[in-house]
Length: 448
Figure 1 (cartoon, rainbow, N blue to C red):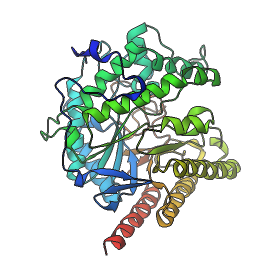
Figure 2 (cartoon, rainbow, N blue to C red):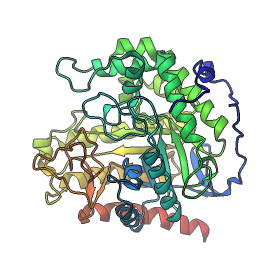
Figure 3 (cartoon, rainbow, N blue to C red):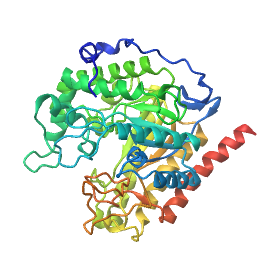
Figure 4 (tube, one colour):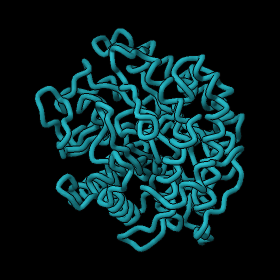
């Protein structure tokens, strides 16, 4: 969206300085219903807020009153999740249309930068329904990866150049290094700020309530998995600009909305090629730390030999959790494992394939979370990736095609059914519900 303030905002906020935007008045709502932070805890009112969550990136698309939307399905999916004990959803509040091969269309902004009103209003509808069910949402304002356009597309709008992730002529880490140039490009950052201002400063068209005054928003998140680069050389080159973008964006959000938490959306040490110092510095002004865990994507297990490689995946998962609990303790901030995913048996995609090893993997995550709950540790919850619900792949090759309306948790660049849980995955849903039931039991004991 092109705003007249672009020339004013393009300079950014060096060092994360405070910001007052023309015509914007920071809200001072009663914060009793909002999620707040106290040390390594999240609170709702005076009680601990434990996250029993899921990822549902496509909520705004279903909420749109268009040919690609499906509001009735959105409400059914939210009812299913609520019945399973889910209290928090991580969803996309952005998508940038452009030339990238696998990016979702439509987006929140068209290729020329103008706003897609229908998708903004789709998010409004989704947030209104989330609030009705006493759930909260983490709203991501962009993406490091190509599947929603993201930072690479913002760069393309300025430079006219782009790199497709997975292009054999540009193997990794070229995509990561190319996208990291966003942090040093002030014009691309100005485009990001335009969407941030439009979203954080928005009034919900369904409820008439400003997003800043809506307790259903738990956190604004700068982007999905923003990395400082792909190669060690690029990370070293761009890390200071990366920190500046993070701090400036947090300050900008807080100036518009002092009521809500802010988060980065980082995977953890994997995002920084193992550098713990970068993770801590990147989260210096965040309200909580995040970790994402992907054993198959990271080579810890093999999809065609999950039984033979499980022991390595299990050990690495436990070690990764332990590292991030230590970092969260050091920072005195909460930790959320806000993405974790594992394939079905044999790395198949159909909902009729068993989930034997996925159940084991979820068990590892939930065991760590539950131990932290009972021991008073910093790991306060998790969001599994992701919710497919009643959606089913439309094509025999399980690939998404632009124009498909059966949105599911597996984004358009991935096989449909790779990581998402369907409404028929009874064993998986039982695990999720058991985790949520424990959280509710702990809350009830505290109230008693």
